[in-house]
Image (cartoon, rainbow, N blue to C red; front, top):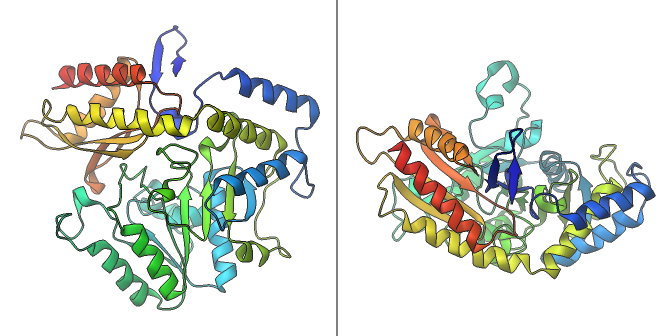
Length: 404
């Protein structure tokens, strides 16, 4: 659970390095697996089948929702989303892609175009021309900052109604796919209200669009289930995962889709990189999933994550600058608000993030003035214990006291 700087200072890692290090740092089983694989086979292209690749493909079909039977491997979450978008366009014969504002899907061209939060490539006119056309953004299911000024108890899922209007006005029956994270991690840990994804699934079926779930951050146990889409029992047509797939030891990602979608492109080469099916990655991912299942780490994510949520929620009454706490499992967000005129939540957020780091706690900060939210994001390793949570919350309290 710890990283150390060049002076030997110890840091509790509640970032998991962008949610990649599902087993923490320095896991001996993972290191031994990689060492053994290095002695056997390291690098062949995707032209050749390997035992490691086949074994991981079988494992991905086993752990993903029923009905997802074809697998393609990639190097990063961005390139896996890129492939998923190409796959949807090819299978549907073209059409627009709808994503959500505040969603994040990567930094390559198609994935960045699907991204609905303001990043450098969207803001800088000298490079924004690289973004492809045909991408439309709908309103996010962000109850704390509703785009329509509604309250959760009486909104009637206005964001879902807006999505349908977007589908009708922006393409009708020529929508290739809707892509989204089941929980918007980089947007500030936005947890959609109950029934939202069930409704999105129905709209996709009604208008002939594919549903793509980007589980690069939320997948492999981070939210207390193997995949976040399992909370509502909604199965996408294409599921993308990465980051924690190999616990950060070797970069890797995967796209898992319905059989007929995968088989539609068996005879064409839509996407691929030299290291897309890297045996070292496949071996790491298989061992990672084995450890997670054997040691019941998904269950630990649910239980310890609930405790983390409880402890963070307990801070709200003591610190009025905390406006909201939300998340599932070990993916949690703490949103700041302007509690009084003397506090600028954006300056406070940056100061708090730096103070927590100085005090030995690694987190992430999602904060942009034009997006109007400041969220401390936490997605620590699946091995996180209640003692780790207590330590982290103690540092957050200490840091808040120093900043306020």
